[in-house]
Length: 187
Image (cartoon, rainbow, N blue to C red):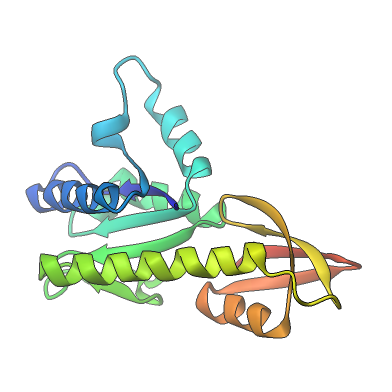
């Protein structure tokens, strides 16, 4: 199962409710979920813990609202993006709030209708999980065995042109080839 970090602001009631609702739905489906409001324990250094959890996760869900630009949500998103994590945006109040360029160029899940949004989020995560598993277990291309870093770790697999093309377009990634090693870099 995917390891998921939920980033949301605590200032807005809608942000907190969305974060809690997403966490509950993901835990019910068996995903490993970390959310600061629930998992950050007293006495822990919060910046260190958040950095550790960003490193731990494979996917970050960003709950974006009018409160997000002035909060740590964007810092967490930047850290996840720099670490090459997959970022999925749940967009609150899409009629009132614009997504900034760094999130606006990715498909976001409008969170105006909670049931539809949760269905779309779960479908998206199921797709991401299947794609990662396909990459990890794909061993049928003997022409190009490589090591590739994917969100959450490094694994060996055979990289076909089709998979490379998919990763480049879907995850906005860039491949650098050096002999028999492929380095996967977030753009």
